[in-house]
Length: 128
Image 1 (tube, one colour):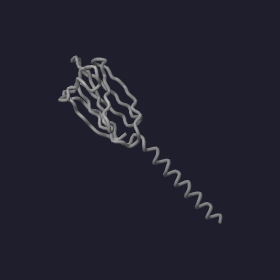
Image 2: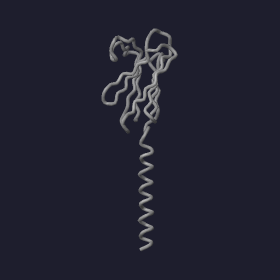
Image 3: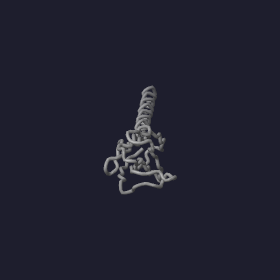
């Protein structure tokens, strides 16, 4: 009976360890990605651990940089602060979802989805 109890205990510890290990790796399951606009005037970096998005304006050209995040619906994140600046957004996404990040040059026209120069856009996909 004592060996049976030890076996049960050892099996329970092993199962708990396996569950804990699986949970620890659920966050940030995909690689971090950096996407540049065509012409490299702006960039967006998505860090999967913590779901952080950084939008950078890299050139003094009179245009803003916008990151469009597709996770089933489109979300627009703007950097309207000018050349040499980076805007940070904590997206707090659900685990294991595909995330496509597109970055484009743009000029604010009063709404998040207006004024985007789609011919400058570039896109990459990862998993949150």
